[in-house]
Length: 285
Image (tube, rainbow, N blue to C red):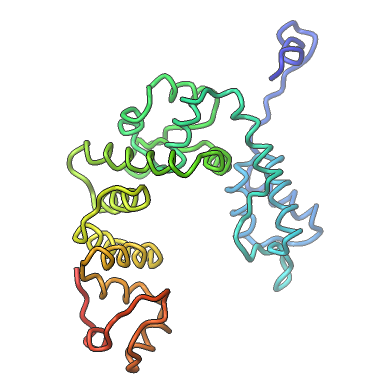
């Protein structure tokens, strides 16, 4: 808060009122009033989660959705029917909070944004602890104990959009490689950790073996992430690995059916897969 404003309540000439984030119930009431109609439960939940209960962010999200037509009436209620967009005006509003951060603190925030949920021990390997203390103190990150934590997370999802939008390609690639190294330095990795490490190395331009990529593609398939599985499988094929089964498994049902009917090659970005392999239903890795 600028000093002239903060001086009002510090000197007793004004009253300070801290506003908590609005609840999901309050978001529903507000949206129903503004949009003059019922709002679907999932839409309320999405907007509440994306805005973090911040009325400024909520307003910008709703305005952007109305302008793009992704928020519209269907089956008697307002529904969100497309991807949630962070408009430049919204990003600028969020970025105001980041202006006071040092370069090191912005890097620490970007680290959490890329990798959340991030174990605090890993975060402390990648940045000085005092920078994390600062970010937590100003409410930009938080540490939670859910899902077997502790985990370091962004306090608000839009902070990630704002900070990553300022990160250059080479800086991001370097960060992804450092994240992968920091995770591996922990020792034993869970299956989810192995998937993240291989994916980060691939995105960051680090060394990845065909065997690691095939294993990661299989893990992505098991976690119902077909796009990630296909990306990892294609990378394994490029490096000479036999990940054809994992890539085919990641394709949509229509594409798989086409192969089972005897088409020679898959029409998926130029990836060639032999018909006899597909017909056998064999999966590798």
